[in-house]
Length: 444
Image: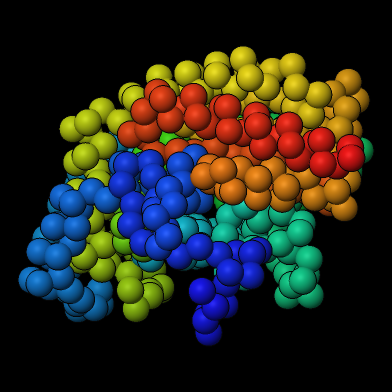
């Protein structure tokens, strides 16, 4: 189908999605695709859940829209209370928006508002990490450290600063803008805060486990508790970007739970509504919310923030995650998927690393396992892998440029948490087959 729509697909005529169920999407030709990526690591509870559609329709028939400056709603108030019990924070409050990029923009402005309410009016600088991804609005893009996405817009960027990625597999390699040692990473952040000047840095923002840009990369042991300590000592707010890692994706409700770290602000989206409705939020630790609420307030807002249908959908998704114990399932199925991948690809000439937590699993591809040298970007290895897999009915999520900003290829797997064991086997075998054919094509 060719229409008057800007397409995100690389193919000229992508297939037309007609229906979906469980971990499967069906196009208008009747062809089935196993969704090994959950879209863009979005779908947690599975496709085609009628109970979510019913809640959506019921709320839309009651109150579809009421502007957040004039009204709240029962679904929103119920959801804030229910999700607060799962957040790694004390008595949190949420600011609901329409997605991850909006949530990041909200978190940045909220961090500034918190510092102003504290009387720290000189704190406006924000630090993030290279090889990160935080969204595609200008503020979120500036915060991000993904060089290929930044390149066309560099003249509009530059207000935020970056430190090295926490990337043990490539730590310290030339061009990688990464370190693999926890103490070096912690020292670098502290030095950046000190260099900015006393009372200048408002916040540090990072993904607990790096998703799209690096492919499910965990930091080295001891990193997160030490980073949290540095931020506390310097009065810097710690903002956890859990847009991709939240709601059971990594086998815990939120990835920060793995290290027992409680951030000041937490950003969520994607799995919060499992793709059924555009939604995200920023959660603030209780005392910070109270300080802003009783102080100078927070100047901010979007037309579709505080949306009642979105809140109703999010509440139903949360109920399903709890009732079906899908967070716990993610932890078990993730270990199974990694074991299958290691059996199939552990000795593959083009596989450098298999990693991740829960059902957020990354496979890094290399041209040389010993040196970790990546395939050159011109080879377009990952594009071939993704295309071959799709032709065989397997949908993958991928990244490029992880090695040095240009070269490097990763596969990121994030299937729905309801995926079956037979489907996990299909993912490992299908990825192996696609990689074999793609590598042979390049060699040929």
